[in-house]
Length: 122
Image 1 (spheres, rainbow, N blue to C red):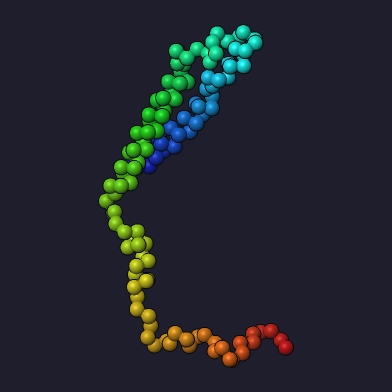
Image 2 (cartoon, rainbow, N blue to C red; image 1 turned 90 degrees about the horizontal axis):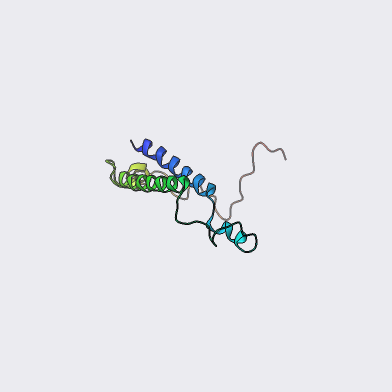
């Protein structure tokens, strides 16, 4: 169910982006109003809404509803709990250290020279 809502959400987002880019801006006719006389008013006709603006409003509403639905589903999952407990980090962090190996056994001493590589000829 969540994957279907996510697909609808992504399609609605793409539709909103496409429809907004296709629409004619209100300020586009402003240059025509100052000289050419092709525009009826300063910002064009603003009373009527065409099919693009109606579709944009519908897809924005769908996007809003799917956003809220996905947020609700994410907050009410059945396996809610700590991320640390589910990822296995807590089991590796809380393990006791192996007492048989001293901490500084593998580290070279400060006054000893480092071992030369065995496969490099002198």
